[in-house]
Length: 134
Length: 215
Image (cartoon, rainbow over the protein chains, first blue to last red):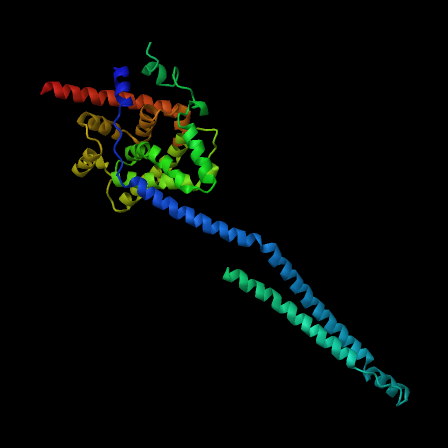
């Protein structure tokens, strides 16, 4: 009885799958493959990210350098300016101690610093915009 | 002594098949390896050969588990698409069909859980579709032979684990260990499923035979 039952079970009929089944599966597979290819293309863009990150670093360094130059120029301008000489003159009673210190270098430094700062500030913004667009 | 005798194999002893199928024993190994390499190389059309090869077997398994042709179609589709997307996770050293069947079994189990939840929410017991007239008609469209249909229906009326074990073991030639992995149970549980299934089927078929003789 057991052998008979088991031989019957081994001959259990296999239902016929719908005729369109294979075609439907392959259509879905093609869609998935297309998505995978698109994702892979996305990954290859993000693999270029070190370049973008390098640009960011350059930008931040430029911005910080700009701030540093502005601060230095401002400090140099203050030191080279007349206010402390005038202050000292007034304290010691000498009115012509303050020499004519040219402020041209300080102005140049300030301009350069502001330009560097602006370049640094704009560089990462430009890069982020590109990444979002991608 | 019959090696498949219930007293012996009911608890698992004397199983003539190896516990796990070796890669060399897989007749489709060459085809699978060629297709897997082609797909990994970017030729997704090559996957069509595996679809052609396994769709029938997988559909039978899904139909046996879900007992509903539309659900079986859905599960078969999802299983093969998932196999395609997870092909990188497939270990070429192992036979392909048990891996694929495991995916199909999990999807069919999910479908059955979902269906059970919906039925419970709507306050009705989920009845096996084969017991309805529409279900019988659908089965007739899929299995032409009347005797085959009767046997299929007897197996399909078994509890989920038992019917899955029967079709995977007897019809799809999977080893007990591979079936256990697919169903997420131990090998001992699979042997118990098979033992109980045989007992029930023997009773059912005997009753059907007596009914036939009584007419």
